[in-house]
View 1 (cartoon, rainbow, N blue to C red):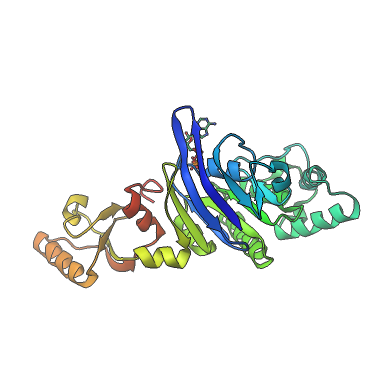
View 2 (cartoon, protein in one colour):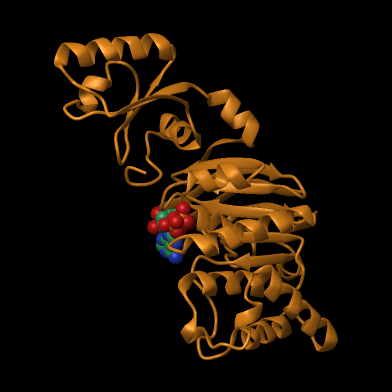
Amino acid sequence: MIDVQGVSKTYGSNQALDNLQFQINEGNCYGLVGPNGAGKSTFMKILVGVLQRFDGDIQVFNHSVKENRLGVKSYIGYVPQDICLEELLTAKDNLIYFGKLYGLSGEHLRKRIKTVLEQIGLSEKANQKLTEFSGGMKRRLNIGCAILHEPSLIVLDEPTVGIDPQSRHSIFSLIQELKEAGSTVVYSSHYMEEVEELCDSVGLIDKGKLVEHGTMKQVLNKHRSASIFVSAEGISEEELSSHGVTIKKKTGFTVNCDDPLLTMENMIEQFRNKGIHPERLELSQSRLEDIFFNLTGTQLRDNG
Ligand SMILES: Nc1ncnc2c1ncn2[C@@H]1O[C@H](COP(=O)(O)OP(=O)(O)OP(=O)(O)O)[C@@H](O)[C@H]1O
């Protein structure tokens, strides 16, 4: 188990993390969700032992990050937000380099590199230099470097930002595979759909505070409410907000409400009176993104 015990961190007068307290069960995929600047990277850097000055402690499989940083590191594969690879080397040479850093060598290293290249879908590109790689391929290789030593805990900081769909699919499959093999995964993102799809448990973080935490089912069931999606020319956010909390989306508005059928009837009447013909008027259950907005008043992405 990973036991986060009252972790706080300040940068000067900026409180980046404020008394985080939660547990992650072994074998779980845990999604840490929050907007830019919420404190996700800071938490991850503390968890993996990169940031050493903080209050509180984290027990990783019964080892204190504070007291046994190097010991804990050997259990962890960390994929930071910024890609950390040697551009002028081939994919294989990058893996050899990182493997040696983790103390692997000889036949064992060779076998691990072969397996990892297959897992990240880059076997065919093993001997190509990274100058020929797309951003998504580099991201996959970066993950490959972090799992060479078969860590029990894999920490991925926003691994799918700005990558192509094929690489995103490959990363999702890899995480599923790691989960099935019993690894614990901590995954940060501000893409809600990803976290809903991948993670067993979730923590919602805003301005350094954990605002909700639990299994995905618990969090969704606790806060789930119905909402109506509206796309209609000539209707404003203000007019819709008389029906419930209204969130502006890229192509319309989501209106959260307690009685969706009655709300829809009222909306239809409002549209009739104003001569508005909606392009879309749909009933849906609220998603993690809406729950986050209701709890914090903060959008995870700009008009996601
Ligand atoms: N090295 C640093 N020095 C000073 N302030 C920092 C530093 N790193 C992060 N911060 C601040 O701490 C807060 C949390 O940042 P952090 O990077 O952990 O958030 P995040 O949720 O990972 O966001 P992002 O996805 O944008 O990286 C922010 O206010 C940020 O400006």
